[in-house]
Length: 337
Image 1 (tube, rainbow, N blue to C red):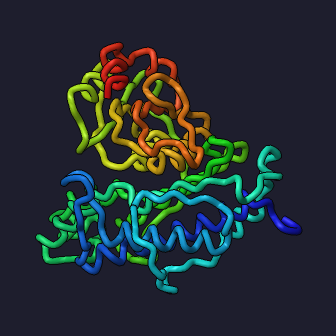
Image 2: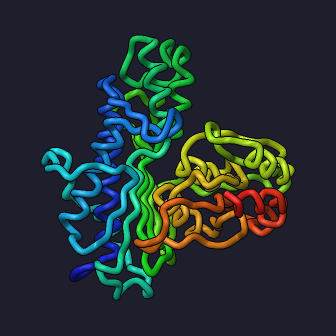
């Protein structure tokens, strides 16, 4: 593309590289064996050194290049000088070469809000680290090795981990980047680890192969660590043929777009805007839909409450069916929460 690309394209191109940098930080901390875990509100709400360093890297890198954007990160960190080796200055040239959708060409920097989850799936990340320590290893074993068989649980848990950078304009999620730090672990070499998926509404989503569950199958993906009776009742009401319980909102949306699940059902207020902004864009860009349990879209203005208090309901196809199956008792429970 000749000239200076629109700010949306430049921001996504930067976010792509920044997400890759954050993914490398997440891997490095795991390999060090020193996670620096603290409990924020309880045993199911953890923060690690990887969360802290990755958020510093993302927020400082983006704010230096785009000082007028609003950035909202999951972690409540004290202001401090960020180490220079955490800063990413590059941009993905492939994205800069793409044409910006017409509706975003004139968007100003100060009109953009960036929602950041530096490590989605922290619980699974810490559990994987414990599994690896029990086996006296910190490097990720490659699939098929003797070590891999001994650490299959750790490897499965690390599949749940993502880095999420979502971009909103006018309260709507319009662009997103998802990095999977441990994707391709089966190849066994650090240089091959990681994958980055990105998307912009009106342009598409890239970095993966779109697949769908057969129409005659309903497979629901839901939480593995934040369940309760309301969540279970709602999942059962979908009359699924199978239920997949995994961690991370980013991971659950990837399950939808890669044909492992039909719907993501989470009838609980536990999810936040930084969990859903980037994944929502990827799903919407390929024709899917993410809403609350009432079928209403979420708003991503800078001043909205962070909690997705009415739960999350997402599907690649037939979203209306899943909305129609939500029991009135579940909707009432969410209303009273």
